[in-house]
Image (tube, rainbow, N blue to C red):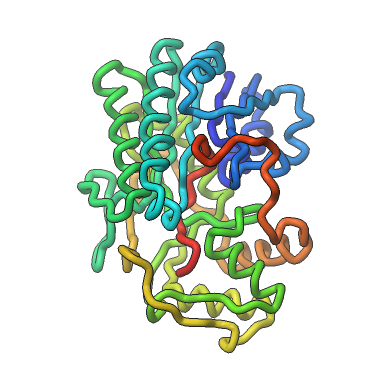
Length: 339
């Protein structure tokens, strides 16, 4: 099979590409990424040396390029997105352009080229905040912030391509991802980066915001299960085994980085900062055999050690092209800059 991965030089996308290249039945992998602030060739590492991998620099909103790249691919896994909540609060139109228009361009091209599988990677944020209970795949979408709204819209566009044209689309919605090589605007790499430098970190409100944490390798495994065996037209939630408040997560990171609570500054809550996300992932477990493999505490410790060893990755890397953020396509992780 030949697989096109959009946003494949971003955090989740690059981990997924490496997973694909371990499979014997994958003949060719093409990465399409605009290499903006969160996408870097360095994320792919030795995968760039694999003769099965082709890297194409470009944006999902470039319809002519997407049409050209789509040719010859049997499967598409779509990670490309403007993924940061704080950025969407000040540049909502950019989220709509990349996440909504980009998805429409991709599904149109996939239909014309008779793609056999299309997986659209999304987020638990589309369900909106839940004070109690947990969302299932059939629950209504109630996004709060512009980023989540743009992802909800892109989910519906992808699913409409199945319902209208029969394009074999599946949607995955994951909780908060973490792991090595994540861009340091997300909460875990941001805190680790600052704490290892002896700098303070900030917590929104009273630190009561609840998130579910999912190691990137488990998310990639779940996405690949959906790519291989998911039912077209269906949505699959992918979660991890650990729910933490932002204060609880801060305590874990302080301990692992050898810092104390004097390093924490409490600041006023961000606008529309949803207090709690929660979803059930029984469906992917029962239908496809998904089960997260990484213990949270061990995986978090490994992540901190990765940043300790890779000092050059503690600061944002310089983009390797002159493309502006107007055409940003990186991957879909969910946590805002501060918690």
